[in-house]
Length: 154
View 1 (tube, rainbow, N blue to C red):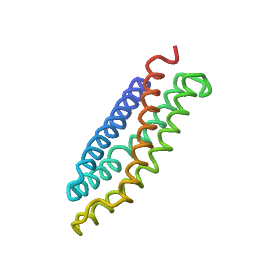
View 2 (view 1 turned 90 degrees about the horizontal axis):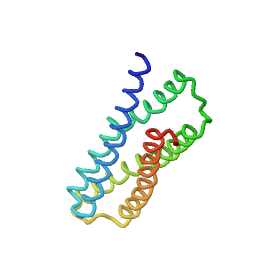
View 3 (view 1 turned 45 degrees about the horizontal axis):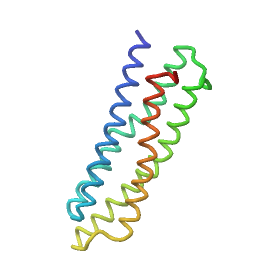
View 4 (view 1 turned 180 degrees about the vertical axis):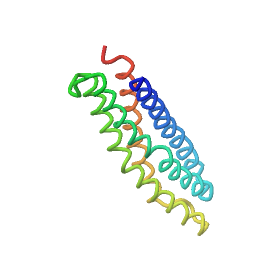
């Protein structure tokens, strides 16, 4: 029973992690492309909040539940598909950590633009494209992890 509960938590937290990431990225990118600084300021602030409320706890829960599942199943962490999954997770989180700080800077920049009535700054757009690039890498890493988890590398 313990294994099934931990597996359920693992699957549930991966769903929340991936879903929050996709949803946040979709709304933040499309809102930014609309170029309305007031709207961008509101949405980026909400994306930062969503990351702290949903992404951060699930990003912590994922390796905790995954490592515990591997322990319960007597799996070697260096086994092919599991090692690749761990490596891709490290890559994804390595991209996500700077994204969190970029989002906070993007939100602050958009807020200044909204308060002063100015368009989004050149710095905003540079940071946004870095955010997009890191997000794309993390997205494909998570897609790879889902594939490996379902197929077990078969």
